[in-house]
Image (cartoon, rainbow over all chains, first blue to last red):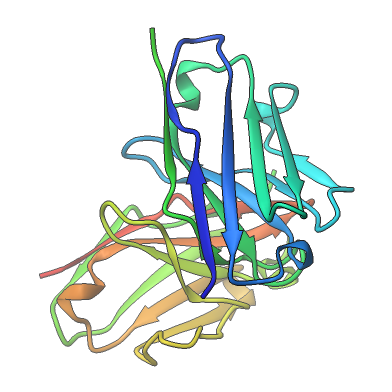
Length: 120
Length: 110
């Protein structure tokens, strides 16, 4: 059974940092593109970043470029999102998602999400 | 930047059919696959349609997807509506190595 379990969310002050993790199981993690998607309270889904199977390609939404870094450790079946210089508008539930096939495909599995709250 | 536009909300009665549209802002929506996700309150999204019109296993055939190139739009149609279909629905496609989501449509079944 495919499982994606996020962790690392919490309350952080503006300007602070947080590292999210996504533990994958039930499939060959190293064979799939992965993405982070977030959802601000009461708002819609927003794609944040994605990463190729071997980590050689990474893409970001403009609003997080230079502040967030996506990475993966295929030996640990884990996906990460390092978030620096956090802003109030980064407050959201962050989901990790597996691409069905390549970068052009959508998600076939989602984690349950982890809440990040940026507030003073 | 490529954008997808959905109606904010739709409502229909149980047993009826409803269609949710998703219109591309530029280019051809048919150039990349469109996916549809269902999100019930307090839950993560789940895929109901992938690759424009394919259903994942476990999704009932009451759910169908289509593309209309003439209007540059994708549609999600749900027939035989059930109260359990009440949820937010998001379309999603792809542009320049990035996922693009529509703003979401709240489906009310009443």
